[in-house]
Amino acid sequence: MATRDVVPDIRPRAGHDLLVGIERVLPNLDVPEPPAEPVELAEHLMTALVRCAACGDISRVREQADALRRAAALLRDDRAEQARPLLEQARAVLRTPAPVA
View 1 (cartoon, rainbow, N blue to C red):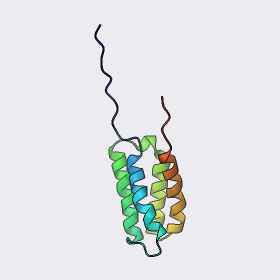
View 2 (spheres, rainbow, N blue to C red):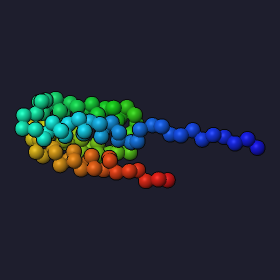
View 3 (cartoon, rainbow, N blue to C red):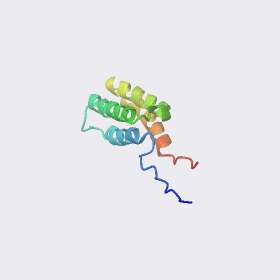
View 4 (cartoon, rainbow, N blue to C red):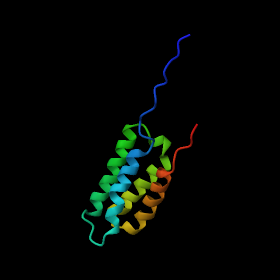
């Protein structure tokens, strides 16, 4: 009887693009004079959401995607201090190791 090799799943884990977007934006919120305008930071978050949706991951990370949408809206309204906790919480969840099945 022949054995079959199992092909490993090499896709990035769900929400990888969201995490990349968060990691790009959060450091800019820490400095007194951010190098980018809040609207530009919001666009980085929206780009991360689009990339995540294109990969079909939104349904697996819906709460974090919603947090990014709310944070982007707050950044567009120039309320970075309210966007930061949303992004930090989403980042913490996305960094949590996935359970082994």
